[in-house]
Image 1: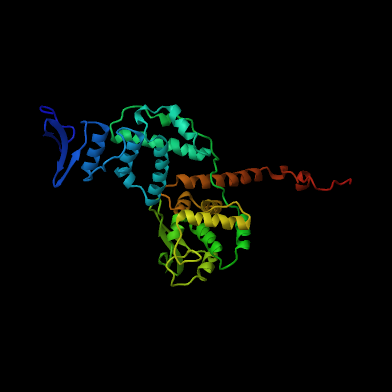
Image 2: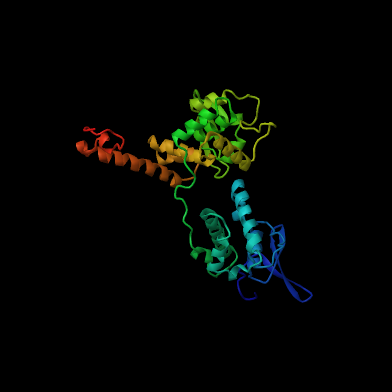
Amino acid sequence: MRGRKNPFPGVRPNRVKGRIYWKFEAGDFRCNIPGPYGSPAFLAAYEAALQGAKVPTSTAAPDTVAWLIEQYLSSLKFKNLSDSRKRSIRGELDWLRDRAGDLPFARIEVKHVEALMGKKTGPAAANTVKKNLSMLFNFAAKKLGYSGPNPARFAEHMKTNPDGYHTWTDAEVDRFLARHGPGSKARLVLLLALNTGMARQDLCGVGWQHIATREGRDRIAYRRGKTSVAADLPILPELAEELDKLPKDRLLLITQDKRPIGYKPETLGNWFRDRCKEAGVPGSLHGLRKAGATRLADAGASEWEVASYLAHTDTKEAATYTKKANRSKLADSGFAKLGNMSNSVTKLDRKAVKPDE
């Protein structure tokens, strides 16, 4: 490096018995940097050292998919994710490591990506494999000096249901409430999810500490676990009635039946699906979030008003609800302009009795 500017400030060679090792020093922080100089492993360790952290010793062979996953999991990019996203993506990457961890990631081709996608059941799960591999290759290019192609980018995207989770209808909500009466935990969970837009992990942690009276009105305020966005919402009468039935000395609003402790998000979701089966409705907790957003959009709420209910950082998702509601309203106003050109009901009613019968 003599005579040339060091591209990695803080790094210096350390010769031991004729072999060169690399060391990083900045202030009081010191650590070893694995070689060879400028390799992906070197760059990953240097990136961490600049932030005052040491890259954990890898148990995977260098430059394999498993090694790449380890580099990502020890990166600031991963550490900046929410706790819920960390849990979900770690599980997804564990699956990927089990299936392809020993493969050199630079030799993976499009056909290999699609083969891995084929090992999943359902298009959404297959697309998650494609998405995660693409993310890993982008990470390698930005942080590890990888200059090859991103094969996941060119893998075939599987067609999925554009509407995603089933959105509850008003009739399904009514059927559920008729089956699970006042004072039941099932009714409380539904009304909390529908009226606040809380996701599973937020429902598991909500308690009396999130409820207060301000300016003469009861409100519920929380910070969404996935986005860290704060939500501050009024408590509607139907939810207030159920909350009034709960003991005020209980920390959590939703607790297990046999023990006064909370649920894990996955456990609560499974428990609620069983209550849906009892009521004969095809519902889920996420579907209630969509129902609440739809209800607001149909009532004329703006994109930011819907986004505030969903506790989102932007209006991208909220726009799908407002646009759908606006299309319906525009269709009605458009047909209203046709005046007396509309068909009578009896002409379209196949069960209607004809005049000569």
